[in-house]
Length: 503
Image (cartoon, rainbow, N blue to C red; front, side):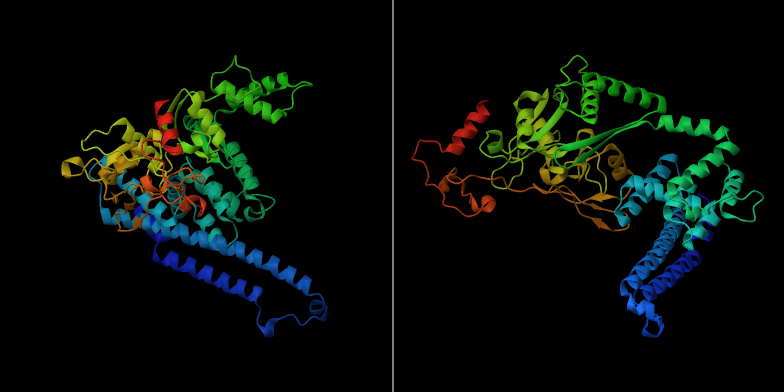
């Protein structure tokens, strides 16, 4: 980064001016929402129609509030840029590419932690702040004045990435400088919704610099990926970012299969059929009956309360990487619907996985699965990396006296595992039920994001009072506990567990 440029554009003077802009707009907003008595309308028609006055105040307030939000975004941009510059100056030149990479990761992680956003969002913000403070001064000034929104500024930063400084300056001047040789015609940027502004900027850039389209397409193709996002009610999204022609072909094939299944006896809608066809294609079920959804045949870790597995209760199970699923789905997975399902018993007293202690460096497979359930994801602040991709880490290194126990183990993705060893990000101790938290190089503490686990439901009369000491009222309310079984006989719960473990 150009340190001096960032400091000049986003340092103390720039931040102070941006903060003053926000303060002035907030005062303006206050006067609109709660005008002083001396400034209240004296027009008799306004006093006779208070709803009209209220409506006008609301709209005027929204206009000013939008400017406040834009000005606040400008303050954030300047603060982020100044922090990045100050950190670079404090650290001094990096001794190697590895050290430079570790510093960048630390910078991103610190900004993400302070703003409580993901590292991807923090990295994007740092890049956008750098672009705005070094190459897009007109856009940054417009943002600070509330003339454009943060989304408009992001559009410009994104659409100018990959252009040299001369082209960036020309593009910015075209849209933000009315004195430019060839200024943009029609609405000014702030009068266009961001999506339309993007189309306008992209159209102008591709007409002026057609060579950049091929470069950007090549970079975009290299960024192709699949994304997975859990949703409520036992559902989830799968998205594929592909070249346009490939995506279109995949869509058309799924649509053709779906249309071929339509008929008088088919009750599913076209979107439902298309989704079912796509799922079958992805899972390799091309010859399967498309009238039912395929069962997953991947490695699935399912945590199900034992009583729910036995059908005694209908508590939901938990699928690693997704979250709660209906009891019927959990039973189907555990019952053989998935090709590689691992069962994990949970403690009826508190809902935690049954603990298995070991005193050796290597973790047994049972303890690895236990950690997957306890941590649910990479434990680093804001990271949502799926546990199946993560590594089991000794929080205090084995060679430094760390033991192989649950309070000294945590799941961490490869990226943050490296960061731990390359920086002063430090995990805090874990416990039976809680993953480790983290302490940043600046001393800020970020608590663990443990799963919100609840005790299982235990039906009345199922557990004898003598052997377990469990009070069923902890999970389902107070009710009488059936007396213990006579010596030599198993209680219903003990018998159920015995049958389950023998299965």
